[in-house]
Figure (cartoon, rainbow, N blue to C red):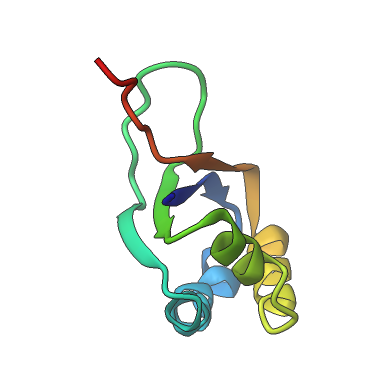
Length: 100
């Protein structure tokens, strides 16, 4: 079942954050992920989400975990954490409607 990694955050240090997208993209590809949404000016509807919203699709929870736990991702993740604020990230399973 597909799993979606959803992240929302504000960029606190745009110059230092600049390399992040180029560093994370090959790692996502390595794990078979597909970027579905990457909006750097999200429109708040409820609550106080970050300006950046990213939704990434993985084939399975195991694939998403393999990406997140990949030692090659650790310094890239740290770059994002060091250059952003108001962050949150969740993994959610794809919706399967109940049988009728």
